[in-house]
Image 1: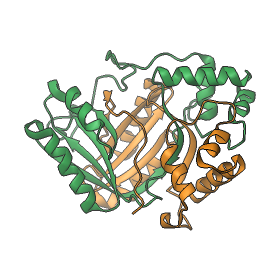
Image 2: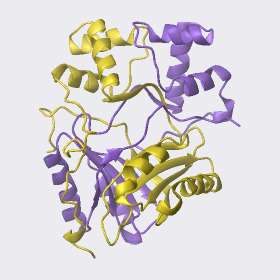
Image 3: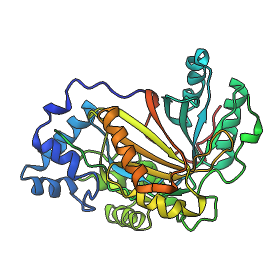
Image 4: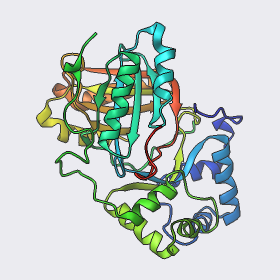
Length: 161
Length: 189
């Protein structure tokens, strides 16, 4: 799936939506009624918070409301890259994206022009998938697993100007 | 075409490596909670209760497990996950840096703390084709804005920057939320 085209522009978002997006990227209260607590902080009703989050999700501005798991919390994953001849890009991208184990696949401006993330239950399964992609395409896959994660993930400061 | 010399033979994930960074083990209930929540929490007044019903324990137990996973780092954060692209951040630059291996932890820590960097990882080099060992994702509205941020990283790294590149994405070919599947149910046809 590619990103969802939104019918709304980000500039049309109201202040409550902006606060929901910016202030609650982390720290969703671990309480029985988290949206009620968010609502109190914003001075709106619980139902309003839920409806706005649902709308932000439907419009594609929010991918989901929930936990961001550390990579490799469950299973094994890796970033991988391929240098695909321009005329084969569609075909190879199709092969790669066809695997349910591949959850991101981007074209980038570089000799290594195809970048994807593959995730599987274990390392053996992951190696099998990458090996299969190499065999099916006849192109080598650059394995770039994460060795260490340096990011302290508190979300991302959104700017609205 | 290059051959298997490019192949990385080390561990595929940090979980398998011996860095002190390896994630803690999860038990069956933790895994069930991860599986039930990875696509997002139900937008319901009592979301933990809905999750609890799915995994067969009470909401207090679910919240306690989630609290523990937050503490031990399995969960990085809980909240609204914005779609940068939809919000107008269309210049998505993967910056890659060749820094001395013995300084990668120190420098990675600094780069990872920059407010405009959304991910920062140490990854293996593949010489000679791929000399870069530090990756940092930069999101901006325009390429010019992204390139200014890259310059900021370069200034921070100083002499340790022995070479870098920015790879802008030109097309999103597939993007689905991360989906872990249960080992039992896993396996392609």
